[in-house]
Image 1 (tube, helix red, strand yellow):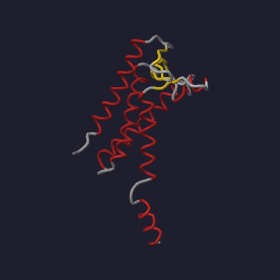
Image 2 (cartoon, helix red, strand yellow; image 1 turned 90 degrees about the horizontal axis):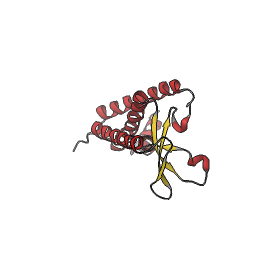
Image 3 (cartoon, rainbow, N blue to C red; image 1 turned 45 degrees about the horizontal axis):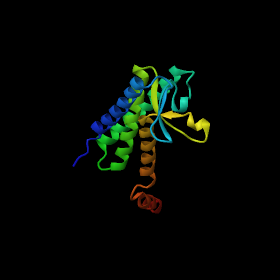
Image 4 (cartoon, one colour; image 1 turned 180 degrees about the vertical axis):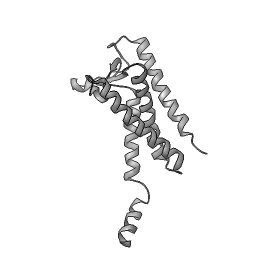
Length: 166
């Protein structure tokens, strides 16, 4: 069975957008609601990038995020269209692409990224960081993609064959 990576990517981005709409419609900016003892819904508008970096320079953040999104989307499309097999690489890139699409959509349409998942932690600095599903998709996708490069079957055999032939 051929996996339809583009619809999966779109569905993940749509799920994040639905959660963002919920946060915007049900929570006032800055409002927090407990989901569990450690997890909260929190409505935050982030004009920067990861962990509010470049928040004072939203145009720079938008340009850098756009360039990164373009690179991820290009890599994703190239890999899905041209590579046979490579399930885990495609899965990782699909997660990264979904997160990139959703957060870039926010920047273009809303002018900021909506974050809504927070954690109650002992470290108050870390407790103030708020995420969204797109952030988790990007992080998980990056880990999966790196792992596919590090642990690709046959990569040691290919390296040994190259060193012997030289």
